[in-house]
Length: 456
Image (tube, rainbow, N blue to C red; front, side, top):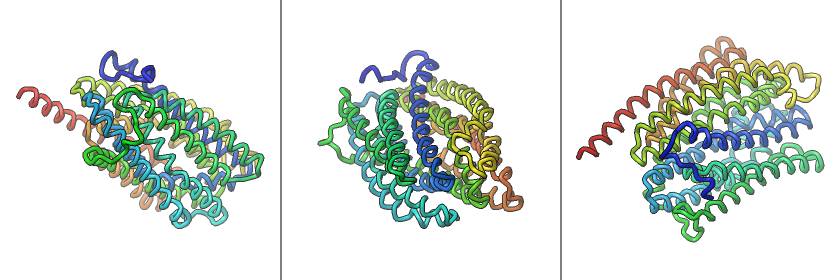
């Protein structure tokens, strides 16, 4: 595993950041490709099944993001320990994170299965779509333990400098996902239940591979099953750093649930186009979100090592990279919007309308997506600095608060897709400006405190 270890503390930052980030981008792209395969395969059975899967995204994220946030806390805790070169803290973090993931997965399974239909009804999911959406969600949440173990394990590996391992494991699991999609849907004639079963099976494979990778490590991050337990100091730090990230993600999802409900008001055809466009935009998002993870882990390790000047460089390098990548990928995908949307939306009497709806969304969301990347990078640096509450408050007010207010004021007065979607870039730009201001203030405080301690 030494060949998978990225040194974050020494040497030029730009090539290190690029080489660290590329596997994360590829991992995210693969995850989306496999989810896209779900949509494409189930879409062959009809637009109603495509709409059914798409209608679950916002509510699934709402329920899951709280515990995914805790995996962020585990990653930051691990990065700080790696930077400090503290083997005991590294050991305790690994052996606390995995049982936390299992417990979180069990809780999510129970909550997701019980609340699937009531929550979908609250979102005004059309009755024609509701039974299929409910079935998909309940099966999906049945495998949530595997989902949590993979996310926590991958966060630990990345914080330890390994981004290639999770890419390899996800590739193996994803290929199985595609093959199972084809088998369940095209051979056995299943619909949303088939793609859901394929998804949880592939998640089980990726979880097993991540656990085995941790068990094979030769350093302090090696996982030993018999030593699994929840250490008080580590779980407190994981919760302190991760809970605000989870709350932020869940509140983001609440605003997205409201937007999805507004999208649902335009009917099944518009929903199908919106689902396809959202899946395509996801490819832009993961290329940018990779820099968020890079910024978080590079900041965390360098903070642990007391290398503050490298922290500042990490921010500006990641901001430059995410802006360039976001503009290039977002613009390129927008230019190819119609052929890309046709991959998801098969020929039907309503296909042209669904494609037009998807293209309209992409104009307002895909083109300015780089603003979201800039916001996420700054959030990652703040979390890497150990400040998780500040970006949560700013993001909740700047993104969730603005969008919710937007829906009940501007959109209520003029309920058109254009008015609805323009809330995205406005909220990203405002939140980024506030996050950057917060970074300057917090960074100066951290440096001043560090200098005072060194002077004593």
